[in-house]
Image 1 (cartoon, rainbow, N blue to C red):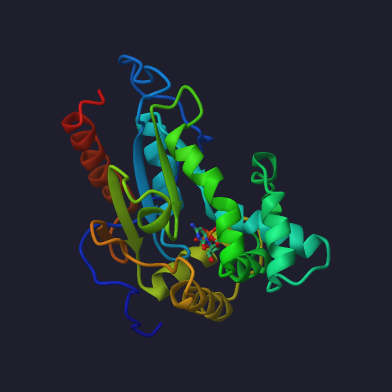
Image 2: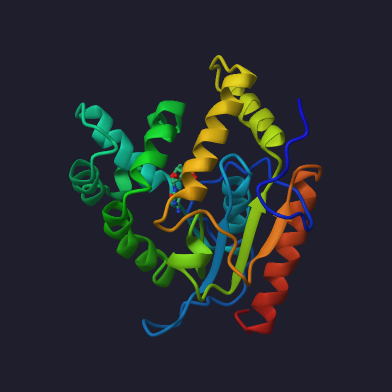
Length: 258
Ligand code: CDP
């Protein structure tokens, strides 16, 4: 593997391997219920980063530990892409893609077929269309503002959570890693699922997707000015999780959420 640069400047920790708990997660502790009424503002964690950086796993584990509901916003774009592909449509056609985005609903997000590489590539094509992003905006903001009970907060992961969807999030993280490290992880993941994965082609797919996601004019992958950048290239997943958990616990305490 050649030494390619990370997408963003390095700062600290590494990525999560994963808890298996479903989202939204329940509170881990038995402390007082934080949901106190309709006017309440829920705690919000925004996690952004490039493909296979480990942000999804980190988000799931945080949700489980702190009793937050989790929304993998990538699944919204993947579901949009899946609907377009299933109908034999062109993911790059704005009208087709927007119509599909408007049909996305929660029950479509658990489909294991969303995880495939063809869908991932088509997802990054539909995601570049402003009408698609607009069609999916309210669902994401609504989830963050009113996470399903009994969650006491929400964690959303994606590309534009800290910059566009939840600019007022209590914690913003940008999780990244070198392209090679991310490609290795994706290959491992795919092989663990029993799929055939060739490192070179996974690497190429990631590079193409990163370029599309970072260079598009509509809500490109970008680091929010107030985000903490976590470079996971050489760090252990559990260490990252523990460091971020400390940050969440401190911030919750400061804001008197618990
Ligand atoms: O899991 P992985 O990181 O490979 O991808 P994902 O998070 O499921 O996202 C799939 C695609 O959806 C990305 O390549 C982006 O193009 C798009 N996406 C986006 O534009 N904005 C988001 N908030 C989340 C995903």
